[in-house]
Length: 265
Image 1 (cartoon, rainbow, N blue to C red):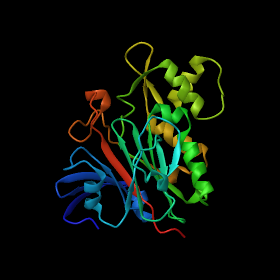
Image 2 (cartoon, rainbow, N blue to C red):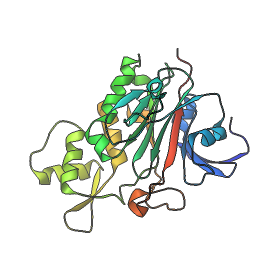
Image 3 (cartoon, rainbow, N blue to C red):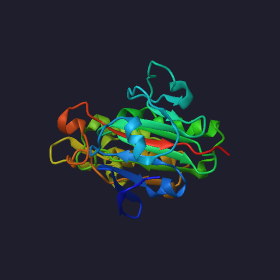
């Protein structure tokens, strides 16, 4: 239980101040009984053991050596002295806390409201191109999940108004969200604009990419309904007082996010 905190609520997200630390929570995950947090840079000691004390509960801690891959690992396999290289971690027991660290990439937390399974994904554009979303959802199915019971929260990341990319990356993003409907680059660019995944930048031949919108469309392609996905609107690049940002500072500082699996049914 979170004690001595102040909460700022919106329709889908809660901002919590607890013992001088600030983190965000998704109402969608909370309604399904999942303990979780998207931490900001406003924390004391920025390690999972200390951060977990703010939430409370008896749980094991699991995290990875993130390498921008599409590899999905069972949480129990992380109980080694050498950190496993992967970017998605899924529970295989109850009361496991699954951790990812980000600074412009997306922290994506997933829970199954029926089985209690949970997963945490770290993904930037490389993970999206490699279909880390698809591979994680398939892993849920192997654990006995039905897609209609899965809920997703996509946390703070660089926003579409601040993530400048070139045309080649836009082409890769287009290929990652479905069948090739268009042939010409012009048609592809117009299509990506029409579905709110990119905008034109002021600089010639540059575009502004919304990676969270791309991730959501990948979840939709996997049969996860729109009302099962919640997207946070905070921008790690713009909000320097709240978040670490690789693009802004080129620092190795990161913020953690986690979700805890529930008792399996």
